[in-house]
Length: 90
Image (tube, rainbow, N blue to C red; front, side, top):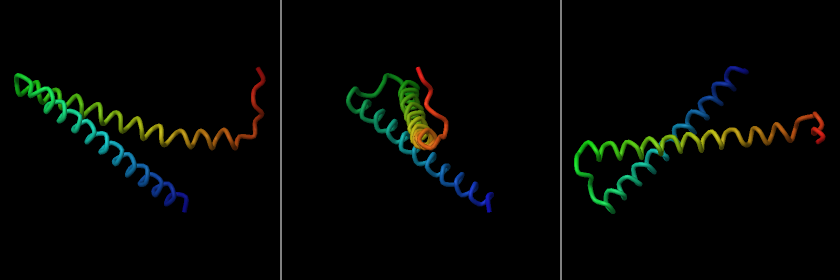
């Protein structure tokens, strides 16, 4: 019973991570696309692929960071609201 709960939680977290990273990927792809439209294509093919790669990587990192924040903040709030230890005195 416990194993099935853990597996379902991991499956749910994996799907959320995939969705957040996919969203970040498309954000980065869109930003690089609109930059190329606005500024024009770079001088060489290598520079354009490098620029798109930078923005896509930044988007993936952004999606991962949002997922981590979304996953950890509610858990931390729950932990501190339901902890039995008294607050430290300053």
